[in-house]
Length: 80
Image 1 (tube, rainbow, N blue to C red):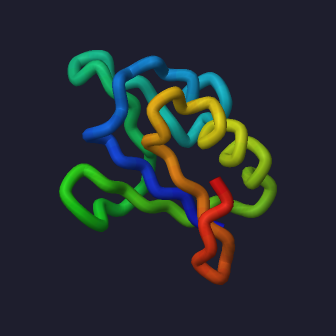
Image 2 (cartoon, rainbow, N blue to C red):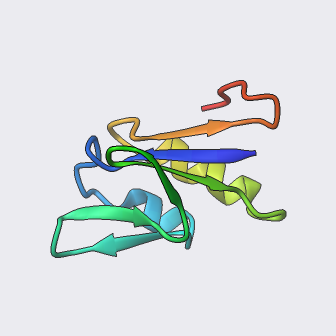
């Protein structure tokens, strides 16, 4: 499972930060960051979800008010 985060879409509500500790507040930019993620496009970041963090990743994706977070299964099918 992997997660993709579009930082350009992020509006800094930080609900993802409350749900999963892979997300952190960047108060200078007013947006969240996805710690340890690779930038795959301009301002789009991807991270393999560690074993045991799947539920937290799902909650983070579901709570994003602007759908800046997408979650994919191992076959590449979008879950959220």
